[in-house]
Length: 238
Image (cartoon, rainbow, N blue to C red):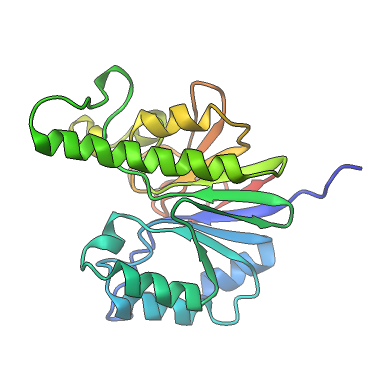
């Protein structure tokens, strides 16, 4: 028997500010009518402040649809990751950092990811200790993703990242910043597993859709990126 399609709404880069100038409650209410699961692919807050996380938690109150997320670089700015994560967990968000969750028969694996560049221009572990530390962080995130994917036993799976795993979906950004928008190491990891699709954010001026070298669909769901639906979120059927 064919399993029913699961509709996932995916968005990234909410950048909730502590002044409460923007509320996502009405958008979340719309998503609750359209989708079975909401995925938020990083930069949930603007500066990683607990007050910002509290505002997001309030907007999600009574949401009624499972929420999966990963943190982004902005969520680390104020060095309050533990408190921000606790607030979001308490709000019912399945916040993934190398973990997995199964919802409606779909497995979700998520990590923040990191920078490092793409293809032949990917940064190598050579030279100054600072460069080696940067590459080690990217490798560590890729290993966390690999370990998470090994745990999944579902036929359908979605990888959630903040940083991009391929260069195609960051096109439109200045070429000078490509190395800071993601790394091919994540695409290489994804292609070793049976992944249905990937979502990421971070590249606000990038392209909505691309594919890994192995053919896995990758969607840039940063809210500023134009999507076929015309909405700030994408709908993915799995």
